[in-house]
Amino acid sequence: MKSLLTALAIAIGATAVQADTMKMAVTTSFNNSGLSEVLLPAIKQDLDLDVQLLIVGTGQALRLGEAGDVDAILVHSKKAEEAFVAKGYGTHRREIMYNDFVLIGPSSDPAAIAGAKTAKQAFEMIATAKAPFVSRGDDSGTHKKELALWATADLDPKAFGDWYKAVGAGMGASLNTAAGLDAYIMSDRASWLNFANKADLALLFAGDKVLFNQYAYIPVNPENFTHINKEAAAKLETWLVSDRAKELINSYTINGEKLFTFNAEQ
Amino acid sequence: MNDIWAGLTSAFWLIATGDADLIEITMRSLQVSLSALFIASFIALPLGTWLAIRRFRFRRTAIAVLNAMMGLPPVVVGLIVYLLLSRAGPFGVFGLLFTPTAMIIAQVVIITPLIASITHQAMRDLWAEYHDLLISLNTTPMRRILTLITDGRRALLTAALAGFGRAIGEVGAIMIVGGNIDHATRVLTTAIALETGKGDFALALGLGFVLIGLALSVNLIIHALSRTERRGRW
Image (spheres, rainbow over the protein chains, first blue to last red):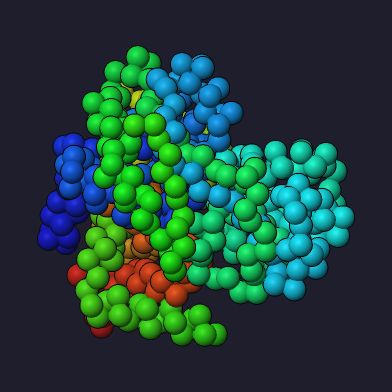
């Protein structure tokens, strides 16, 4: 019993904090893409900085920034980001890169969206066919984008029937649901390519410019809190817009498909 | 069925190759849940015993509240602890959010009522048996609590193991207060949730089998150390 207690005491004491670390809230889509696994080791190597990622939806990422629980955020919802900076929670917004959204659905394609000319038209076809559609429903960047697309087609998801399922979950969990229900879903390309449980789903529509998905980096305003690691946040920003990051981001592929395009102003 | 088989294979390979990440998150799972168990037992065992022997006005209410708190939803506990520990919250200055300490705090809140309630149940029966003896010996309340804890240790072990079981398998609260940060707060259960999200069911299930194996080993080790379930001994 005594040795057990000693082991416990050591275990409690081992909760040590590492020296040069910062916390960054990122979206599930960024992490699911696998790009973070390429960038983080490079950041560690170049800057000797441990970036701890909190993988959440854009809505929660912004809340974490507001409360000062992270040092920076990397998200993709322009309107919400601009409001965040305007309210003084972040110092500025720096565009880093973009990827695109794609429409996924059952390979039989009951709503025939593969033949659609625009994203707007594809959404109208799904609504007309009342084909099952899984929505993130979690106030994430992807969810906001999806709502904006329904709005451009003059459709209101609140008025939809049973076929519209807001699951309130991350990208991966939502894709799992769509796979189980054989439903349509909008996903970022990266999450889709990395998703292992594709079942009968297939990529049906992509390429419309409105589906582009801009990621931006926002350091949390250090004036609101005393503990924000602003030096690390600034170092990370410089690194993210550097040629080294550009090369890593542009050369990242899954199954030979390029996922992200670097477009930061250097 | 294929997925389950793939999960078993994946669990086997993870363990056979001594996967470094697996060892890290397993150790963290153990560290968090055992710490929580230790602290919670320290509070709950005397509390449950005290409730069994002490008569006071709101005793029934206190016990009812305790029993109801066994069913505390972990997500709600997680959210409350999160709001308290957030930089914008009352305990924000300590910077505890998204650390293993925050996860331990949440788990202590979740398992303390469970351990205290089971302890109270067991101690009430034991007290009925010991009541006359301990009263006639004119013992102090502290002495009575210690005697009951010592003689009822096997029931208390069950209470503690139930608490450990709830802690090690818990995901809702520690996901919120820990944030599932790689190499900092990722534990077995949050890793399982993450891999499920990625659609990698084989790895998720593999980690699940590791978790089950871990819970089983801890139970066996504690039983062996405390020499219960052996002939002629308590």
